[in-house]
Length: 120
Length: 111
Image (cartoon, rainbow over all chains, first blue to last red; front, top):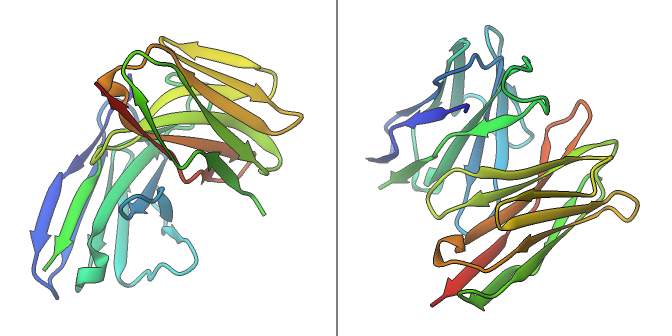
């Protein structure tokens, strides 16, 4: 099956520092990766969509200069939270989608296990 | 506006009992509907996927139904187990658009 990993699983940082979260598709090539944020007891909120080799598309209200996304290869996307503040503390989840049909005929998104970010 | 609603917001049942979760959507043009299980502190895991032409889909003790005419779906869990305690999220996909997530139903299974 398709596996998506995230690293780190949890991170604690000081206010004002930057944090990088990696999302990898382990056994398939992901032409598109998605970054979500989830606050306690709420559903996932899409932050941005990234396609390999091109700039990410950010959802309304998401600051592109604060949440830097790089999709440098077909198996890796990174989210960097710059100058983190306590209100950025959240659960960040990535998902990866392949355009090929070898894994799923439903143009499926496969979710990573998430990264818990705590900004002190 | 594309929306997905779920009910109930939360549910508590005893181990071994059955339960049914509801999902209503106004997503158009409809492509498919998914049910995900999300354990606390983990990413969502797909349970079922249904297209317009599919009325029911089973995955072990999970059975999803879809009524595309009324734009309703349900997820039935049979003989619940403690490990079923999680949030269950209904996600609807429209052609050429991103997923539309429901708010989820938080299920607690008690011994």
